[in-house]
Length: 324
Image (cartoon, rainbow, N blue to C red):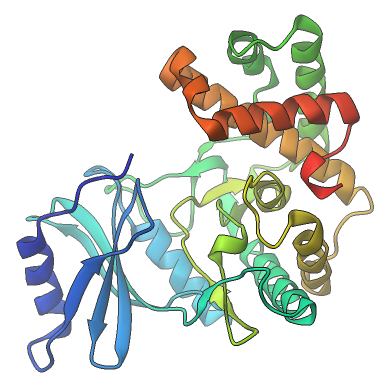
């Protein structure tokens, strides 16, 4: 459900302090963004984006610091121009960035352009994964905690994966006893091949074609780091594979992203097996979260049904269905 707009007077007052009064600006809500309120600001020939923290208790400091670190490392992400730890009127943390020019990647361009853009995005994804996170799961966003270095909610990867926790929610969404046991076995395998230390890699968290930007057939950058977390490197690849409306198709884009990624960080020999395990893990965690939150009402959501069907297909085939 899309959150209502923030108080426009309070937002314009903050933007007036940030940008000054020398040049007028316009501010309007973007059509995308439901849990996070995002606004586009046009000032002369320049465009900026304002991200409002989802909750009063959530700090955008980790996100702002990650943007700055990645931008300094040459990764094409939005540059931070202002970070407001907590605006008393909006009662939220606020971050303002420059725009990444262009539009989301689509299949409408030439195949060669899609390949070049996918490889460029893969190289940036590898550099993103170079950023360490102490722990696994959602990045901690408390106001009284330093935003950098990044820290996450679970100490170990085993605590994050938590194979034994799958049984209840999966049984609730009509998985058989044998299917649940198979999922538990696969999640245990994911733990065994995953990070052994207490340090994970930062994940973009919502890596797909909708967040890969291009202009005139050239890659311009990655946007939207609102879902960052500490994980194994495979998380972002799994997100790409489980996107129900990926365009261009996953089978086309994934290989290009992997090729670019491997230019910066070598992929392990068993990468495709790890990717399969990551997809099972991602689907299981999503179904569990939605079912525990919504109960049987979760079945009303088309994306819930899509992910459930994907997990069933993966258990039957031993493959990721969207990349066949």
